[in-house]
Amino acid sequence: MQNSEFRQVVAAALDDLKAVDIVVLNVAGVTSITDYMVIASGTSDRHVRSIADRVLDKARQAGQTVLGVEGHEYGEWVLVDLGDIVLHIMQPRVRDYYKLENLWNIDTRARQPTDAGQAG
Image (spheres, rainbow, N blue to C red):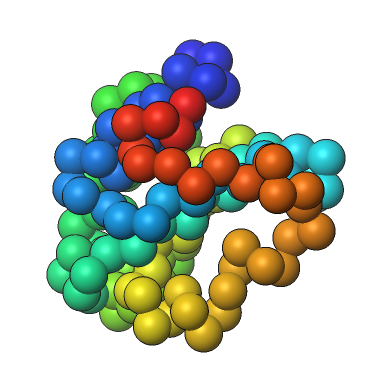
């Protein structure tokens, strides 16, 4: 599956469970860890975990390997490592505290605030 197709799978999973404030960062030129960093918010610990579960299910259905999941048991910040895409799903207060979007020295044109349907 092509990277752009897989981004659409992730976007659809985020959209399915109404993730909010989705930002897609193209970090391919900044780090060798991943190509895309996706940051999204859920409204509660249950919502964050449910979003992560949906992404995991959709990724596996698409035949993608899940490299790791961190933070699922607490639901404040769940990191899903999908190789070319690293997804951070956070509660708003945690996201506001860590401000991951600001950690990357990326031109604002590379930042793509989007609704889930346009994350591809």
